[in-house]
Length: 332
Ligand SMILES: C[S@@+](CC[C@H](N)C(=O)[O-])C[C@H]1O[C@@H](n2cnc3c(N)ncnc32)[C@H](O)[C@@H]1O
Image (spheres, rainbow, N blue to C red):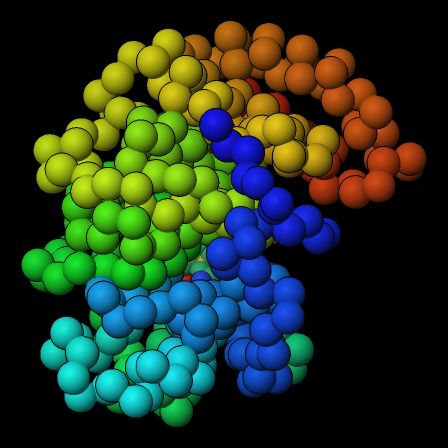
């Protein structure tokens, strides 16, 4: 069901040939924009906007941070020759890309100082990074509509969406709002939907939602943490507005959660899916059940748990974090 014929396989990537980007030349400035998304995800976004985008709908970047993802999309769009040639005769009567961003990363609850560093840039949590984002997107002012504020407060107009890049489902409410606002606007057999936080050890609601909406999408692959989908048929408003994570039982949610692409996954990503499952059990069930499940996971993935021999020490870190957070009941 989640297998892709002739998938292109590279480190961290398993991609449908229709969206192959391995041969796409990407301008250096795409990689120089400050941000959190990986090089491969930037290439994917650039390539989707440059080669796959057909001007049948708008482009969304939700959770833009300092600009990496939205600049990748905008740069790609600039190099899309159909877009440049038909700029005035397409259906888009306003700026083609909508970017959503809160504008700051919250200061740790204990009030301590925390910074995010990228090359020569040092950003202090709690401060606004909007000037950095504005600077990143300044060459693309005519293409990008910047929406600063809590995404939960925004609503999407009655416009079709052709590329929807989501890096904002950090809470259950944001996840629910993304589904209700954007999903019904995806175009049958045309739109790409990418959820950046899918192959991640937390945020289980994302896996639950995408499992629930399985019938509406063809799966187009993985690029690092991102899961890529192509819309197969229109998603009715009432289907998109139903939130399985908050409204369905734990059992139902587990089924939906476990209905994720897995055949192609590396052990590291399989472990992440198990950790996400443990958070789901803790959030909707009970913490002891989640901790018991983690004991099984620890033994199944024993070969990755030794910090001295493991290829990636992050595996043990992620596992320990899940145990710690579930024990304390503090999940963020
Ligand atoms: C992982 S970062 C996005 C990284 C970005 N796509 C990039 O290319 O670097 C997630 C972003 O979501 C934003 N965010 C979190 N909660 C939000 C909210 N309620 N409304 C809008 N943006 C929010 C954060 O401020 C953060 O910049």
